[in-house]
Image (cartoon, rainbow, N blue to C red; front, top):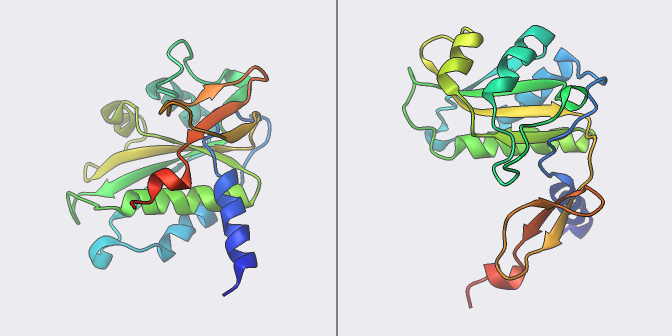
Length: 195
C-alpha cells in the first residue's frame, strides 16, 4: 500500500473547499474548461448511463446574464454574492439529459467532485451552486428542452482563504472568521464511525 499517494489525495481533498470570491481578472482557457469536464468521463455512473452534459459559460455577456440568477451562500443571509471584481472566470452548468433518464442517481455528485478536485489540483477554486433560477438559466443559455440544469459550478482563481475547522457543539454552518477567511466546520472521524 502506498500511503504517500493516500496522503497526497487527502491533501487535495482538504484543499478542495467552496470558494465564493475569485480574482476576476484571471481567465480560464476554454481548453482547460473542456479538460475539467473531460474528467467526468472516468467517473462511475449509475447503470453506466452517463446522462450528464455540461454547458460552458465563459463569455462576459453570458456570465453577466446568469450571475443574478444565482444564490451564493445560504448562511450569509446579508450577502448577495461576490462583487464585480471577485466574480468567477467561468461557469459549468451541469445538466441532466432527460431523453436518457429522469434520475441521474449519484452521478451528479461524483462528476462535480471530479471537476472540483481537478480544479483544486491546478490551484483553481470552485463553488457548487444548487440554489438558482433553473427556468431562467435555461432560457438565458438557450438550452435544449431535454437538458435540465441541475447545478452551476463557478470556477476561478481564489481571492479568499478557505479552511476546515473542527465542528463544535454540532454547529455545521460555515462562517467567516475575524481574518475574513471562510471556515467550514467538519465532524470528527470518531463521530463518523459507528461503534
